[in-house]
Length: 161
Image (cartoon, rainbow, N blue to C red; front, side):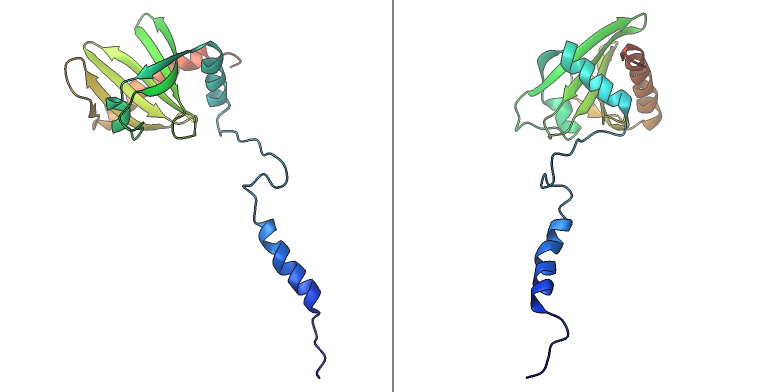
């Protein structure tokens, strides 16, 4: 019989332990704290969780943003505020197992809604007329401008700036 140059036991141990090194997303080596890239987003989430009120949103507008609850109302936690330019509302949505914001305010008889992640990146915008059906806002400049106005209001409300 010929002599082997590599022992089988270390090779077998390495083959068994190699997949464990790739398990970074599991809690194998202890819980991992998941944070967003935005400290302001984290603070706004905490503000809404601590002082907001549980509410339900009609499913039509969030469905256009990709948020669905099988046709049922969407559970959210909301916080509202006002200034000279009107009433501002932010809803914290967690239906897709991640925190997302829906910023909304009324302009005349139209409700303008913006979906955002916790880094305050606008993902989708919807216009919802009082006596009509919601529609995606295709005017990117208008949507981005209104979104920045709403986010600026909430930046002023976040404690610990």
